[in-house]
Image (tube, rainbow, N blue to C red):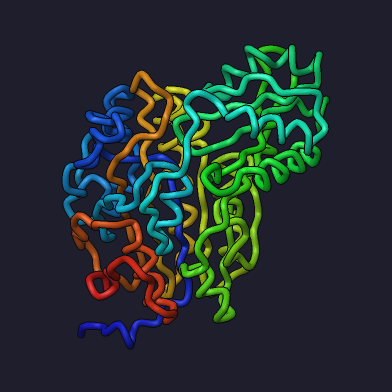
Length: 397
């Protein structure tokens, strides 16, 4: 007997974002200098294959066009891939689109560093003795280059990338994390109008050269449009629990409970903890190490091991799935660690959906926007439709 949308009682969605795990260039990749990129495919090739049996079982290797992943004869889940509709390829744009926010304009970027007036205002308002850097750089390389001078002069290190970010790196013995966060809030207040970057990011580090970044990173995002899934759910009194940097990406908008994490495995632990305590609504997790630790550092071997470790922990999540749960796994952009650059890449992202009460072996095809996930969750939770996206709920129940 077929189950109708009306009859289907899904109470809880566990939504895990594998930050930067793309699966091949989008048709407009040439506009972003990303032709030929394929995060999963190239990582698998360099690693001589990936052992990810849980994702294979759900249907990862059955997605149209995926490379480097084994196919499954009888997947237990639903699978597809998604294109990004918005004009960008970063964390903010990707996550915002997932919940129904379309970004038609690119956020500002500063490939030649930030203008003098912004830096002068930052120095004046924070009271720091000056700044170092103010250029495009790898976060790990710039603290190697300027960390000792920063310690000697107490000047914060300012840097950016091809993404719309204003990043501040400080040694925790010079400025405590709270002092660094205060600087970030001041920078956030300065960066307005045409200079309103997507994120101001605190990048604390410790130790001696070459230095180590700590787990006290924080993102201070531009405020998202309130017409989005998270706000709609919160306004109806539903749980929206955020794991990892989700709270930061949405500037706390639409979040009812949040916890930050130190790494992917901690993110999985916190997700499982929420599954024990929250029995309805949304548990929304971002696993950032694929992007921050391996993608941006061109560490394809670490990336491969990270994917395999995530898949092992996926067993724990799947064991806790109840009859009225849905598990959704997807990415927010690519970050192919085999490219010459260290920036995000404009790629399709995989989409995996699993639930004990859902259909099995359903090919969801190519989705035209990440917002299809948000629209599906909106339908599940019976909140107002999002402004973009097409629900696939009727395809999977």
